Length: 392
Image 1: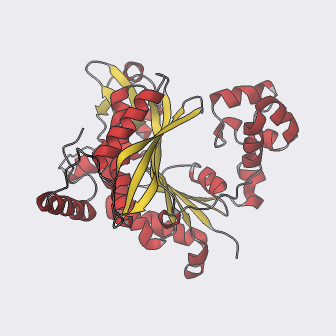
Image 2 (image 1 turned 120 degrees about the horizontal axis):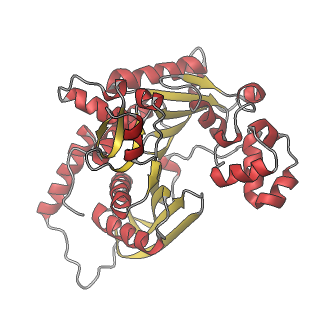
């Protein structure tokens, strides 16, 4: 049986989630239907655009550009501040719904995931039918739209989900690559950033097809291992598995590719807080304690850096994970724009195993344990944003 992979991606997630929440609170204006952005302060003209509506895009407004530039293009632009706790809640609820269709699910960021639908495909007349049912169920349940890309590997499924938006289902099987993917600009290939695109243009390679038909050894002589990787992607080659949470035996973590480059430490810490909350919930759900934390950064140049540290005591609590992640971030960050942030925990142990305590550690009281349990039940029922501990 051939593999069947879905890639599910929320359309303009931050703006969609903010729009849905405002409508729930009684707003008569849908941010998705007017020139609107999620981002900086309109009055001070500071900050950058994190997400934009389709009407805002019509004015030429781009994700990542300064708010002042966006205002020059559209003086009536509406801006809403980001709410990462809200986004984390919607993400948690959506992933719960998607896992009811297929438990073999890998969440790769706050607004996207992969499904290995191989063993489920016989339940539906076609992959497109299954994807449409999933897409429509997300909209009927939450009020926001997703794109679903379908293929037999993760790379092609992701490329397919980036085709025409919003609220669409697209296929990109190997036999469709030449017609659907090769005519696209090389910049649209996954893992081809600005610097890679510039290097390819110097080689007079302008489309994905140009790249796919080039001798891989020529690419490697100019771009080393990255040249081989993007050549394989241009030819639709990718055998990476969908890594479900249950398969992660040695580490538990999460990462997110940001809708725009993070350029300040407070922005980064807010993302790290959300990631650590998610990792904490997953550790508790699996009955694991983490003895090591690592923080990963990917810069806008696609350069990756990471660092790890031993925790003084194994834990599944969000606060010590967040403190360690921030400490590592401060050591790592060189001030350049950040494209991706990730937090991973390792050196896992079962919760029932004895723990070597620090001399200054105090055991948790029964009151604290009951409070934590009540908080986790509320988060399970109403989403991760419903209640939080007061740690910063």
